[in-house]
Amino acid sequence: MPSLSTVETAPAQTIRVLVVEDNEDDRELLLRQLKKANLHEQVQFIGDGKKALVFLSSRPEERAAQIMVIFLDLKLPSLKGLDLLKAIKAIPRLQRIPVVVMTSSNNPKDLDECRKLQVLHYVEKPVTFATFSKSIANVFHAPKP
Image (cartoon, rainbow, N blue to C red; front, side):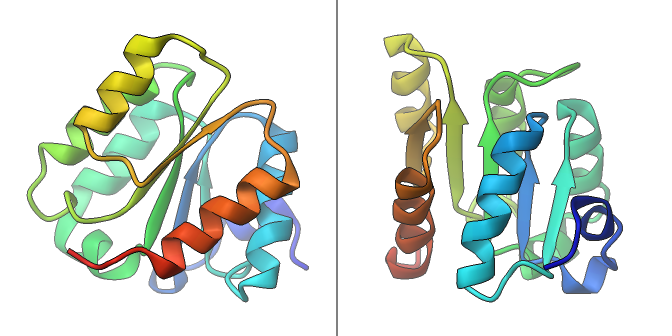
C-alpha cells in the first residue's frame, strides 16, 4: 500500500477519490478501506479547505469526470467544510459528485445543512472502520443521478 505522501502526489489523471481531511489517523483509516475497494492508488488527500476549493474549481469539468466521491471533514483549517460543501454545490459541473461528510460535530444544524446540500452520507467521528466501510459501500451502491 502506498504511503500517504505517495498518494498525495498521485498524478491528476489517476484521481478517483478526493479526501479533504486534516487528521492523519482518519486519512490512514480511510486509505485502508479504499484498499479493499482497489482505489487506494487513486486517492488525492488535501488537508485544507481553501486548497481543496482551488483544486476543485481550477478545472471543474476535468474534476467532475475524474472524481467518483469526495470525503469531506467539516472542521478544516482556512475554509470550513460546510463552506467548501456549499461552494462545491454552487459549481454546476461538481454538483453531482457524491460527498461523504465526516465530522466530530454533534450540532443538529450541521446535519440539517448537510441534508439540504444533499450529502450522500454523514459519518460522525470518532470514525471507525465499520463506519468507513458503510460509507464506501454507499458510494458504490448509491443510485446515480
